[in-house]
Image (cartoon, rainbow, N blue to C red; front, top):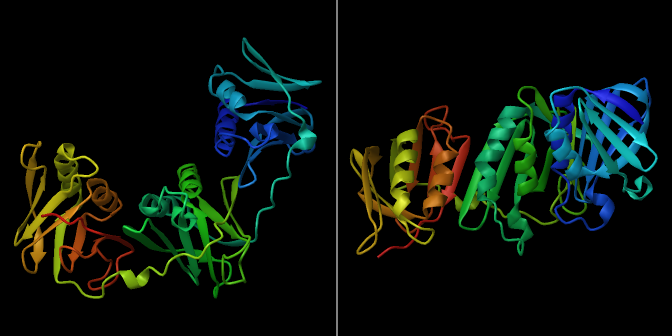
Length: 381
């Protein structure tokens, strides 16, 4: 194999593919990145990584002298590509070594046994697509609510529910539930399917989406109506493809946890509330609550008490209902507030000890907002 390639395009493709490399590979070859040029006429280099759970594949245009395939250390190649000078790159195989030349820089890499590398899974059937930036924003809103505790795998995932032209993303760690509904273009108008995707993988995939264009979502369970059992989901965008195994578990029935009626409602300018919460939270640690007191025309944010450091800030707020004082974990509150995309955030309460719902302003008066974030308050004396 021998080819020449633009330095920036090569470095970008290598860095993207390296995301799926395992931190602690089960077998040595999984630390490798596979480089393939099927034939000289294709003019495309395919880069692949795989850890039996997540696969990543990218393609980049190259000038081909000789087709072929090779497996090299993925992280080392990524480091080298990232630090190459801004000149064209030439890559050539020489027996059990790979030579990378760029300007006056020259690197020699040892190859790994290509015959031992596992076959990457095929992309499942494409179920539909949606704008990549919209999908990435939805994942950013929901993924923080997923649990980091691997003892309950169900809670470490983001649930994707496909129903006609509606795609709903949801995540929970038992103390909060984040839900985002959005439109997508389904290949099957009457589709009803679901997938429980590892939150870390989904968030990483969303962050890596290129600006502009649509992302195709491929689902192995299309037509089955469920994501249970062995399943896989794939995302393809801008010539780059990621697949991951689904979590084999049933997601919780979360809709019943959202209250049907509220005793009090507040509307506050989103950006000022976020900034005030960040400032007041400076005196709070993870176990210290951030208290919000709502009364007509204002909300008071407070943290700290007694001999501890204290902070207090007052903001204007629209408020309906009896005066209420409620407390939240600072990060839990901020995760909900920063996910709101509208200029005004709505906070809905039943009692100070029951779940509150944070949302953006609905598109229509009285309608249901696209994003909802249910969070349990903390009990304070």
